[in-house]
Figure 1: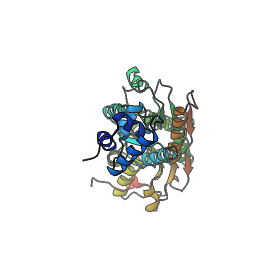
Figure 2 (figure 1 turned 30 degrees about the horizontal axis):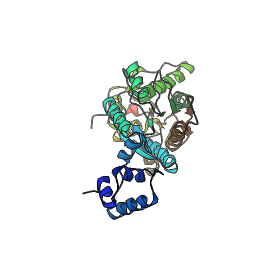
Figure 3 (figure 1 turned 180 degrees about the horizontal axis):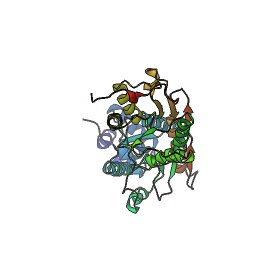
Figure 4 (figure 1 turned 60 degrees about the vertical axis):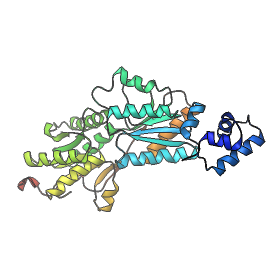
Length: 349
């Protein structure tokens, strides 16, 4: 059984309060008592509880991080950036995954409050009804520094780091139109999410600027999973004309779309064009020469952690927001296809 501070107190012959002061590095302890306690801690191999220490100080050296999809490489890289900055500041990271579930998000926030965290970095769950006053108050009632990552919360004034998703989708849709495409499918994820709404707006604005009407069936709405994108792409191939180009609005959606295209042996860029939003290591490993929008997720994490630490240290009192522009990597998959896949017959596999 692990040693407790009561065991330390008995071994050192001092009070519990003295042990607590030594653990919390309080100067109000004599050198003699301090040596007794430190000797007992070493002999009993006692490991102090960060949770208990946080309660006694009403503050810990922990920052909370909440993400919606820890398996997504994008968020893994964001966490890497956050951790690199936190480590240099002597802060520990307590991580929670919500699976895009608002109840799990609320539970994670309650647990983090119990740990007396110094601040919170969060990519919030978003949807139809979450942006009411009660949802915003849930964050405000934490009474600690909060930095949002990748997704904003309407009607709030929190610090945040975001990519200009609308401008990025406008840019890549315009690029496809410039290459002769008018029939462009967008794997759109959940259209109730603000991040999806911004990207869909960018897609639609590019068509409007070119005075072209997009086909309604080409906005493929579901959720943000690989399976959703896979099924939506398959359905489009089997029930409609195949567009000349596809846009994967996230790395997961790109993977699902590419899986379906591969299953039907539809070649990129010979038969369809493709642009992905977010880079994946898989693209390089499989030597897929895809035109991609690359977001520096590690840098986003670093910037979010820097904002949070400034808030914690009182260096920033106003609301600060970084709007980052992703980089477009041109690799040729945006070109107009050489042959028409609609001349082939496709059946369910």
